[in-house]
Each structure stands twice: as C-alpha cells, then as structure tokens.
Amino acid sequence: MRGVRRLLAAYGCAALATGLPWPLLLVLVWDRYGDGSHGAWVVGLAGAARMAPYLLLSWALGSLGDHVRRDRLVRATMLLRLACLAAAAVAVAGDRIGLGVVLASLAVLCGTPAYPAVAAALPELAGPQRARATEALVTIEVSTWVVGPALGGLMLTQPLRPWTLAVAAALGGAGLALSTGISVPGPVEPAPDAVGGMLRHIVRCRPALVALAVAGLLNLVGTVTGFALLPLSEDAWHRGDTTFGLATACLGLGALGAPLLARLATATVPRGLLVIGAAVALVAATPVPWPALPLLALIGATSVVVESLLTGTLQDAVPDRYRAGALGVADTVMVGACLVGSLAAPGLARYAGARPALVLVALAAVLPVLAVRLVAARRPTTPYDVAGEPPGARPDPRSAPTVGAARMG
Image (cartoon, rainbow, N blue to C red; front, side, top):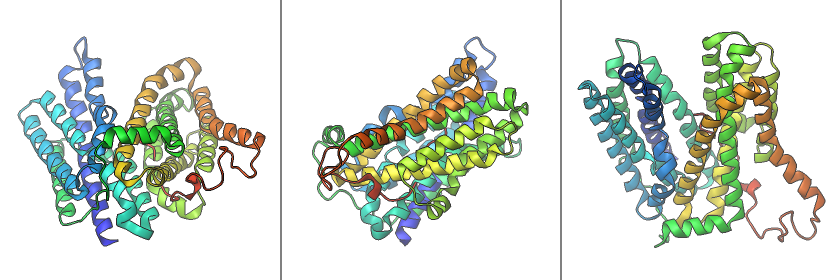
C-alpha cells in the first residue's frame, strides 16, 4: 500500500493546487471588471471557468486512461498542471488577470484525466485494500474541492496574497515529485474504440446507469442545500453572513469525516440517501443554527460515503478497458448536476423560501429509495430478483466497497 499512499498524496497535492488560486482570481476579476455594466457576467464566467473543463470534456478525457499507461498519464497531468499554474502566476504578477484565469482553467483541464485514471487502476493496484483506497481517493477528491479554495481564501490577506499562485505551483510540483516512480497499471486489454465502446457499455449496463443517476442526484441535492443556507441564515436564523460561512464550512469539511463514518456504520446507497434526506429536513426545521451544524457535517460525510459506494459500483460494473472513461462520465454528470443546482437554487429559494426549498431537497433525496422499495414490494422475487433477472445475473451494487462524494460546489 505504500505506493498507493504516495499516489493518493500526489493526487491530493495536485487537487489542492488547482483549487487554491480561484478566490484570488475572482477577487481580482471583481476589482477589475465588477463596476462595469457587464461586471456580474464577467465574474460569473470567471467562476464557471473552474467547472467548465469537467462539464465539457471530462467524459472524453477520462478515456485517455483506457488508451495509454496510466502512470505516464498521471505524471503528464501533474507536469502540465504545474506548467499552467506557474504561467498563471507570471500572468497575474504582470497584471494580466484574464490570462491568469484562462491559465488556471487550463490547469483544471489538464488535471481532469487524473482522477478517472487513478480510480480505474485502484482495483488492481490496491488489491484487497481496494475499498479503503477508493474511500480515501474519493474523500481527497471531495474535500480538496472545498479545502483548496478555503486555503486560497485564507491567503487573501495582503501579506500572503502575492504568494497565492506561487504556493499553488509549489503544491503542483510536490504532486509531480510524489508521483514519480510509481507504477500505475493500465488496462490489460486496451479497447480500440475506448470512447464509443465505453458509452455503449454504460447505456447497456443497468448498475452503471443507476450509479450515474444517483451521483447526479447526490450532487444536485448538495448544491441546492449549500445555496439554501444563505437565505436560511439571513431570513430564518437572522444571523447573517458569518453563520452562513460557518454552515457552509461544516457542510464542505464534513467530507473529511467520511472514513470514520464508514467505519462506524454499515453503509449502503439507499441508507445513505435516507440519512441525507432526514438530515436536510432537520436542518430546515432548526430554529437556530447551532443544532444544524453537526447535521450539515453529517450530510457532507454521508455524501462522500455514498459517492464512494457509487464509484465502487462503477469499478465493478465496467470492465477495465472502459473503466477510466466511465469514471470520466461520472465526473461530467456530477459537475453538470452542480451547475444545474447552482442555476435552479436561487429561484427555488426565492419563490418557495429557504425552509420549503430544503424540504423539497430532502424529498428529492428519499423519494427514489421509497419508489424502488415500493416497486420491489409489488414484484415477485422468486426465483428472480427485483429487476426480473436470476440472482447473480448482474453485479450486486451492495457488493461495492463501502466507501466514499458529492462536490459541494
């Protein structure tokens, strides 16, 4: 497992590196363009530049891990990320803010094949420890999505601000150094039609389709919940921006508790969705913020556990020659759900109110589970399972590793 730990540490450093510059870049864009007639649109586009590479290209770039040696691919992503971040530091130092945003977005783009490649290789690389390794990888992926910008926000103080992009480049360099010398197995039988064949396999594979659908729902729920905390803090709790920041931190940093939660409870996807739905409903009912904070941390941790289960399902359901591409599709689905949630949440909170919006989110989390159980109860199960297939004819999602999440964008 030593090589696996180094690989995960390398991935964590690189993921932190790509997330850290964005608070500074958004502040610089706001200072430069925020007062203009189209300032809000410019700032919005700058913020979307972090998500756009995942949404537009992750489904295709993820398949690179099914074509080439995965260790070389991972190191190439590290090197290109480092180059883009270093160039962004030079651009910002030269007051070329727009170019800095483009280069930081390119750093995100260069890193998109890394997560699918590493996740696809873990079943062979980690062997019997696959479940724990997958749990750790998904926890790193989700937590760095939050922690990277959080660290960047802390560096917005005047003494540290000039060093933000330099620190990001240094983290990228650390990731490259840690990944050097690690052998990451590639697909045993590379597919000549990795993208097309992968998409056809997913369409025909019910467990993969269900995993992707649940992953999208999970991220939609997380994004709308995160946005609804703002009007909840302002209008219902009457505590203002400070409480909103604390609540958001609990929701995002709760991801770090996923490994402990997975050890304490026997997790399944339905149980996880029911826990998330119940916790969101309780948050909506709290008259003051303090009881909601541990519930928000529980939502964050449970989301990571559920997404790790879904990752394990994809690892089991998709053959190795298509696995990296399928995980890239999962990235696209999850970030796309975050984008949909970001667009829908303001209107939902405005017209329904913060508490009703959270109740609707809780219902969205639990209704699929209740619907599946209702259908299962009405169908004969002997000698066939609830899908109408003989037992063992398809992978059992419950056999996926009990490990971990949603990108709380």
